[in-house]
Image (tube, protein in one colour):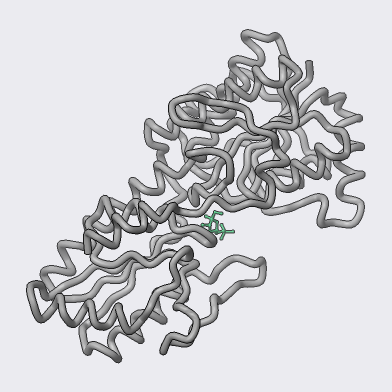
Amino acid sequence: MRVGLLTGGGDVPGLNAAIRAVVKRGEGRHGHSVIGFRNGWRGVVDGDVMPLGRPHIRNMLAVGGTLLGTARYHPHADDGGLDAVLATLEQERIDALICIGGDGTLHAASKVAEAGVRIVAIPKTIDNDVWGTDRSIGFDTAVTIATEAIDRVHTTAESHNRVMIVEVMGRHAGWIAVTAGIAGGAELTLVPEAPFDIDRVERYLKHRHRAHASFSIVVVAEGAVPAEGSSMSYETEVGRFGEIVAGAVGERLKTEIERRTGFDTRVTVLGHVQRGGIPTAADRILGSRFGVAAIDAVTEGRTGVMTALRGEAVELVPLEEVAGRVKHVPDELIRVADSLA
Ligand code: F6P
């Protein structure tokens, strides 16, 4: 078989582990040829291909980013985009396509699958908000980085008696904020799933600083918003490409906290640091497992599916169940973060 492979959307550590697994098992065990498309769906539309063999994946397991490159581009949203995808796949004689991506890439994958292409998807996003899987590639590394950052901010917060706001990624879901907040011992964790009450934030900080500490760590997901009708006005700031403006909610919170409490406050915006560098062992393992599951699924003719971690097992879930849905942080996790304030 000739199997196409692409990585789309924001990069994450662990993508190269998945690519490596697809190539090693695809070529070595199944005798397939793996053809890489550069820069996500853009490469399929443009016919930008590269052969993928053993030499390309050598020593890539521990390397962050994606050797295929990536882009935020969705062919179904572009005039003629889908037709161009079909034309390239025919020209390259691609029998099936493996797409590694987050919500946008998977949505595009479901549209291309509807057009008759055999697709197996692999979920990746540091946001961990892809529906249908317990974990997405990249999340573990991002939480590890964010936790280390919170640990580091802790000691300087304590030395200076400051409120430290740590803004982490998470547009629609606060997985990084809640898990790194728990692991790093944040006093307050604000996430998109639970719009925050700024009066409560003020009361809590004043009480804490009066009663037993003179510093606090507030972890905020970039997509967090104040509750409707609350006494703080804020609308999520979005950039030219629909991305949330990094630092916007963190800076706005700083102004509000300082005005209300008088406490010296600083903001650390972790930004793309969370997506860079060496993948953790967990992300290398997850990428490898998903890669093997995806190429096996292709080989067995089980397409229109996404690999998913469910408990201890890797399973296949129908793509149409996944596309367009967001996996939010469960109440229990939010409650744990809240209880440890
Ligand atoms: O989708 C993953 C993500 O890392 C989000 O958490 C973040 O909002 C966004 O990507 C940033 O995207 P970009 O790399 O395009 O700035």
